[in-house]
Amino acid sequence: MRAEPIRPTLPPECREHMGRVIPKLGEKARWTQKRWEYSADQVDAKINRCAQFHDDQTS
Image 1: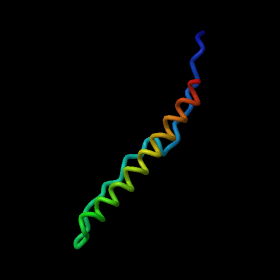
Image 2 (image 1 turned 180 degrees about the horizontal axis):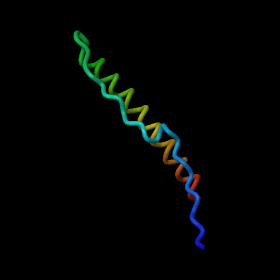
Image 3 (image 1 turned 45 degrees about the vertical axis):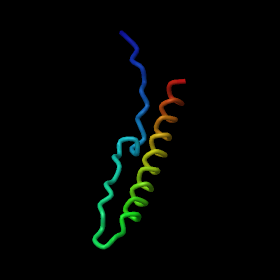
Image 4 (image 1 turned 45 degrees about the horizontal axis):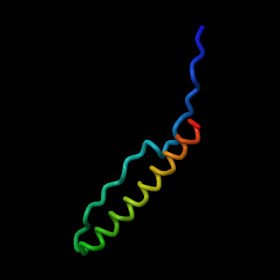
């Protein structure tokens, strides 16, 4: 009999994709850009949390 490693389950947020930013009718381009930047910042923070979770499990 062989021992199998126990792998922790990733937090659900680590499998979520970035929401799409769709320009709104009458919205200025800079506001669409700001919404995209906000979404990208949120995804970057999520990637950092998921990477930290992984690092904590493997060290």
